[in-house]
Length: 395
Ligand code: ADP
Ligand code: MG
Image (cartoon, rainbow, N blue to C red; front, side):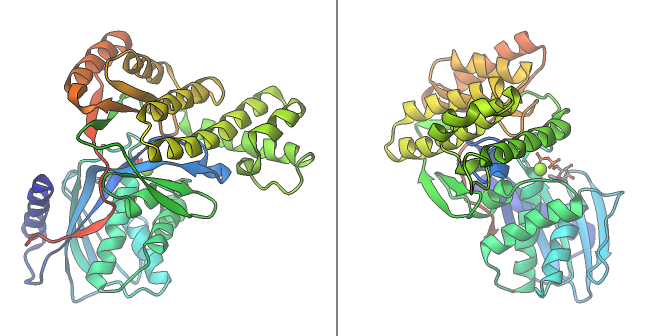
């Protein structure tokens, strides 16, 4: 927290240095990145996910303006971008600003009284690593608009607007999980989300002084991800179409039980059956994980993380050599409860649940062994579950 406030002050100083101090009070918000503990490739099948908001976030500082102009400064990129609220268009020279532009455009279209502002922001969510720096930026922007405009907004509505901004304005076909957890996460808790109904429950994590969430970045660009993602989506849809003949009324793989799938899977082409088996079993693993965490059975939760990785690797085929190396090294290490790839796959990060007492040894071992086996220096982030987007009060 002390570090967060120190960084927030720095962002406030940058705001004044770049745009001048217009005398208004400086408003501050933060919005975190996220890691999904289990439930991968289930969101677009109307299924379940179990992410946490992490203690890495975007911090935004802003002062209102009297006109309808928005002036942005991205501290980490040392870049500016500005526009008028009455005419929000995409800025191809400052693509980072489009996340903010999109959120403000949609808020305005839905009648929220957005105001002009000068805003500066900075973050320590690594960009493009699969920890959702984009959702953090959107949620920070949306919350800041509400704080500066002094209007109330339901948190889930803000989440939906942020997702719509990324889908329709930025043009990235993401599910709702990232914005949801950045908006509604809670310290020391995971969030169990039903991606169909958006019902959610906070699930207490094992005490964070005993266990750490360690995120290991393979540093492999998620190259194949777009085409493979779309292909997987189509295969899941095909599975639903074919299974509907035997299970009328199903809308998504979420509606298919393991037992029914076992009965009818032989009607599906082999690859489609494999994809469906991953999704159906992964949904089940999320439900089992919630039960395990509620029962404080950390070992069982770790085992489920491992099973999720194997399913993603062998059935869904979205892992890669580097992710597999990272997971194998972790699973052989002392004090590791569970390890798996997280995110869409083909690179990005793994997530590990590790006993706090040995976390430094674990990080050293992972760096060394992954470095030797993959020939790449990884980045490793020791995290804990934090609160979702909120206003920061400096005084
Ligand atoms: P991810 O969400 O996995 O981190 P994305 O490609 O979806 O990756 O989003 C990353 C983009 O979000 C960056 O390219 C940039 O445009 C924007 N962004 C995120 N964090 C920052 C930041 N601290 N400063 C400027 N832009 C940022
Ligand atoms: Mg993103």
